[in-house]
Image 1 (cartoon, rainbow, N blue to C red):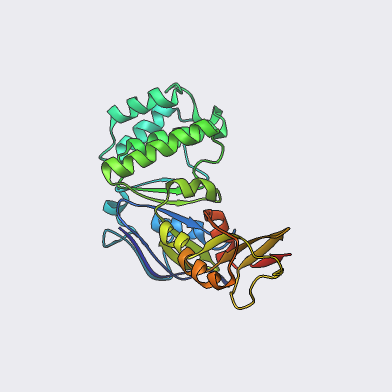
Image 2 (cartoon, rainbow, N blue to C red):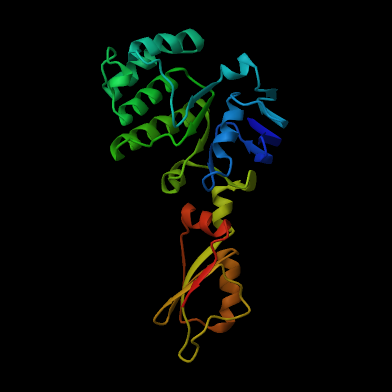
Length: 293
C-alpha cells in the first residue's frame, strides 16, 4: 500500500504540494488526474524517492521511501522522460536492471521480447519514441515489481501497442497483485483500467474515490417534458444543462435514483440515464459548470 499523509513540497516561493493525502490500495490501479501544474509529477517523484518532502510522510508498506533501498526494490517506474544510458543497447540496460533488481526475471525478459520484437542489440538512442516506451515497459515488467509507477506512460505508442501494454499491466495486477499508480491526461484510457481515482487540484487531492462511487455520485439524464413546459425545474440544481428542441440533457450531482425521484413529479414523458465518462466527471468536479440553452 502507498500512503501519503500531509505531503508538502515547496520550490522557493512556489507551493507545489500543499498537504497531499493519498492512499493507493494494494493490488489496485489508481489513476492520478488533474490539470497541468497541479502537482501530479511532483507527487510521483516523492513516491519514487527522487524528492525529499518538506513535511509529511510518503510510505510504501508502512516504511518511509526516502533513502530506503529495500522499499525502492519493490518499485519500477516509467516516467515521461524515461532514463537510459546514451550508448546502451537493450541488452546493456537489461544487465543494468538485473544488477539492481534482485527479482529480475530473465525468463520474463525473453518472453516479452517475443511480444515487443525489438533486437536486443539495438542502441536505445536510435529507437523511435514509441519503441523506447516499449523497451521501458519490457524492462520494467521484467523486474517483477510489486509497485509500478507510471507518468504519461503510453505517449508515443500506437493504438495496438497501447492495448498490448495495458493488457500486460492489468494481467500482472490480477495474477501477481501488483499495485499501479498512473498519472495520465488520457482519461478515456484510464477509465478502462483504473479502480480508484484521485483528482488533484492546486497541490492537493480534492477527491479520492473508487471509479464506481465517482460515477454513482453524478448523473447524466436526457429528458423530455410534457407540452407546455419549456424550462428545466428551478428547484433542482444542475452542474450542466443543454437543450436541443424539447430534449434536455443535464448533469446532476446525485445518484440516478435520486434524480429520477426528484423529477418524477414533473411527469417527464421521457427520462433516460446515460453513462458518464471519467473525462466528464473530471470536468465537472473541477468546476466546469455551464449552461447551453
